[in-house]
Amino acid sequence: MFDRAEVSNFHLDLYSFTLFLNDIFETVKATLVWFEIRVVAVEYKVLFKEHIYPGWEGDGISALYLSQLCQSTSSV
Image 1 (cartoon, rainbow, N blue to C red):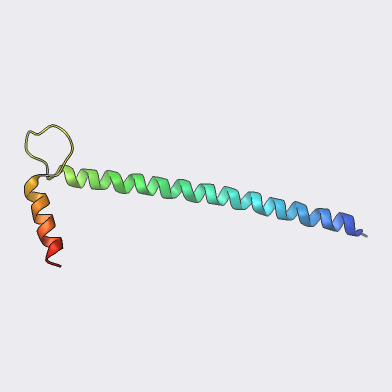
Image 2 (image 1 turned 180 degrees about the vertical axis):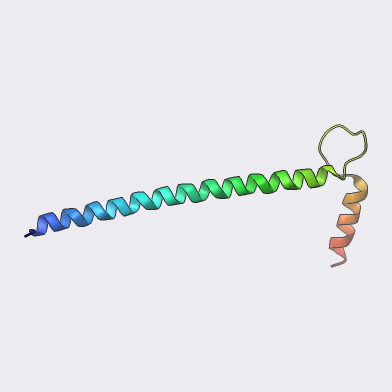
């Protein structure tokens, strides 16, 4: 049937393959998390762009919105 060396080599190959699959899974998971962070960042950027000064060039939050945000968070 099988001798011990063949069985041992099979277990090592199976273990190596399992580690390989785990590495692939971790890479895919990290990539998905990175894309999710990018999507959330773009959503917040669009949200904050609604509160910039009219005619002001660039990204940022208006002083009025920022003060309202600070007041609402400090009152909690």
